Length: 604
Image (cartoon, rainbow, N blue to C red; front, side, top):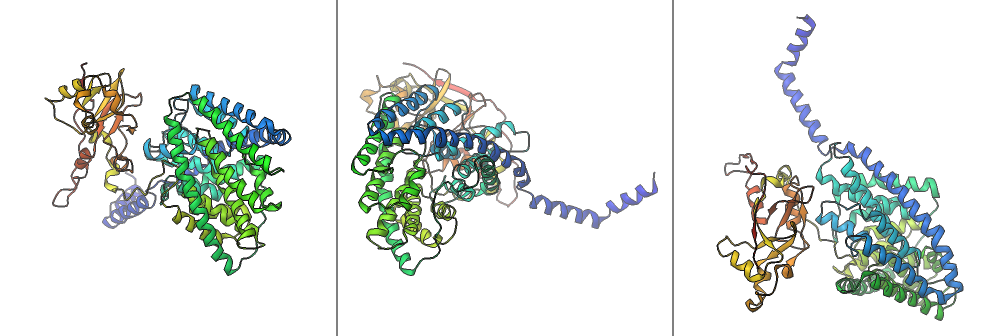
C-alpha cells in the first residue's frame, strides 16, 4: 500500500479528526437545513415566466382594449351599458362552460389553494380564466390587472412544482412556489417589486405573514419586475408626484381620515361578502349573473357622467384616474360621488363573479376621499399627502394588508415623505375595520407547528379501513347500516366511484326522522373537504384540520383521485406520541396495509 495513503488514512482515523469532522458536518447541515440555494434557480424561473405573461396581459388591456373603449364611452355614454353587458357576457360564458367552477378564480383561488389544497392549482382552466379576466377588465369592469396577475403568477408557480419535483423540492414547497408566483405577478403589474413581495406575504392571513415564502418571493418579484421593465420600461405606472414634508397637524388629520376610510371599508367588506355569497348561491346560469352585473356597472358609469362631465369615470382599470384625481381640480362632492360609485361599480363587477380583484378600486376610492378630505375638512394644500393616506387606509381596511398599503404608497409616490402619515392612516383603518375583509378565504395566523411532525407522512397515521356512504342512499338506509358499526363523527360520501364529500352525524341528527325515508345522503353532504396526498406531512395535515373552518377529516387521495384513506384529529394523536415517557424518541412505523379497504353503506 502507498505510504502516503497510509499516512492520510491514519490522520482521518484519528479520534480528534473524526470528532471535529462530525461537528463541522453537523454545523453545515444545520446552516443549510432549509436548502435555500435551490430558490436561486426556481424563483427566477417563476419570475421570468410570470413577468412575460403579465406583460402580455398588460399590453392587451392597457394598450389595445381599454384606451379606445374608454374614448368611445366618453364620446357616446349611451354605449356604456351595452358595452359592459357584452364584455361581461363573454366572461360569463367562458367561466360557465370552460372552467369547473365559475365562482373560483383570481386572488381568492390562490388564497384558498394556499390554505386548503397545498398550493395545487388546476391548469386546465388557466387560459380560459385569463381570457375571462381580460374581458371583465378590458370592456370596463370596475377592477384591474392585479386579479389575473396574481392568479397567473400563482398558477405558474404551482405548475412549475410538478415539473421540477426531481430537483429536491418537497410537497411543502408547492405552497411557497404559489406565493412566489403571486408576488411576481403583483410586482410586475404595478411595477413595484416591494409592493408585490409584501402583498403576497400578507395576502393569506389577516394578522400574519407567509414567512416561509420570503426569500423566494423576493427573488421572483425582482425578476418579474425586471422582465416587464425590459419590455415596457421602468417609468411608474401612476402619475403621483412625490411629497417633501408634512406637519404635526397632518398626523392628527391622518388619524381621522384613517378612521373614516376604515369605517367605510368595513361596511363595503361586509356588503361585498354577503352579496358575493348571495349571488353565488343563486340557481341561475352564471352568464346571466354576469350580464346583470355588467348592466349595473355600466349604470354607475352613466350616472356619474350624467352628473359630472369630464374624463373621470368609475369604470375600467382606471389607472388614468389617479393623475386625474390628483392633478385636475374636482369639487369634494364630485370626488366623494366618484368614490361611492366606484365602490358600487366594484360591487356589481366582482360581486356577481367578475374575474379580477379590487386593489385598484380600493386605493382609487381612498385617494378620492383623501383629496376631498384635504379640501373640505383639513383645508390643506397637501392634497397628495391626504390622497396617499386615504389610499393606504382603504387598502388596509379592505384587504387587511397594512404593510402593503404603506409600502405601495412609498413606491407610488417615489419617495418616503408620506410613509409615516400613511402608516398611521393604515393602522387606524385596520383597527376600525376589525376582522372584516373583502376576502372570504383569509385566515387568522396558523399558530406554531410542531417540528417533529414534519418528517411523518400522512400515510403512516391515516385510517385505511374506511366506511363509505352512498350519495344516493336514503338517510334511513344509511342510519340502519351504521347500527352494527362503530359510530364516527362523519363518513366520506361516494357517488359514481368518486368521493364527493363528507356527511356528518350532526347533520343527520338535524333532520327529522320522518324525512329519512325520502331524503338522500347527498342532501346533507358537505362537499368542501380538503384533500391531501399520502406523502403530505402530519404537521401540514394538523394545520389543515385546525384552520378557522374546522373540518371533520381530510381525504387522502392518490394522484389519479382515488381515495386511499382518511385522517381525523383523533388519528393525529398517535403521531403526537412520538416521544415516550422516559424522553426517548421512538420510531414511528408505517401501517402494514397501505391500501385502503372501502366498505360501502349502500341501500335505498
